[in-house]
Image 1 (cartoon, helix red, strand yellow):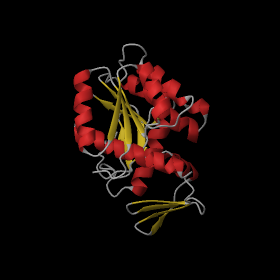
Image 2: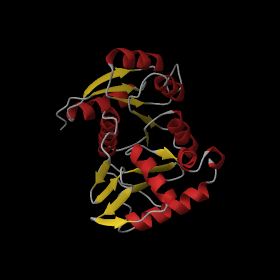
Image 3: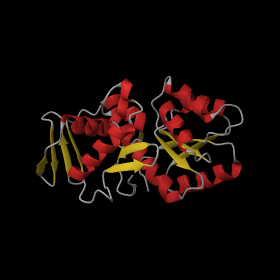
Image 4: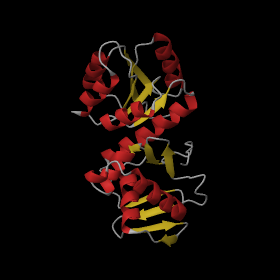
Length: 240
């Protein structure tokens, strides 16, 4: 159970889903406030300053994408979309609008709690300003100041593109980054749709950093959507 009593805002119009999520979240020590409409959710975010937002896309007044875009105009609160929309394009649109993560209904309580932990850790990293020049997770260490990468204390030599790709993922550790976002950040805007570049370099990066590239520990694939650098040992990933 969490000791911090983080405040979670649940923006969901379905009473049964709100009740289920309330029981799960409160049972794990979180404080919960609820909103049944998008506008109410925007107001609650402004007045209550939650630590995280769980957002349904199918709201009665505003579409969840619009709520996400409005929140991102003035807030960096982590947003996890929880929606019955399961098409890849829906996920990409939500993430591009500013959501941190996306869960498709129905989902298990364990998966939701793991995604919440990751989002909260990402928020903590943002608030610290990512001032630490050394990023460490498990046996992977990246020294940003020296531009060195170590795996099990052995230095791993990356190409400039591989290193840039890794640092973008580190900067957004725990957050899903869409293919187009990664391509723009690493290669530039004109390459935003050249997914073959990303696939090739991600495979190379996995080969160098993963003990078993077919079962990655760090570089997690969100099929058809993008990638994330894992921050929670409870996460599972897929390969392409």
